[in-house]
Length: 97
Image (cartoon, rainbow, N blue to C red; front, top):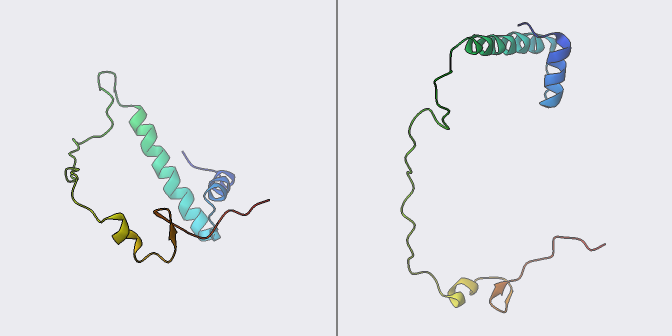
């Protein structure tokens, strides 16, 4: 399936890309190849294939979430430029109307 120049222009507009004429021609060819692969995939019989989220099994590689001793409130606030009522004070970033 060959993309038209108008379709390539529309895709580059959506992707906010500025391509030279040579880059646009190359992109048209590459995108057309990708669409051809999808056409090939449509021909496969997937009737008895269960949907999955991932092709490979996923194992959690994060550490166990355990509570540990942490700094006291006073230690946390001791280097803060400004604090009040146990909280950091920061400049206002939302302008009032």
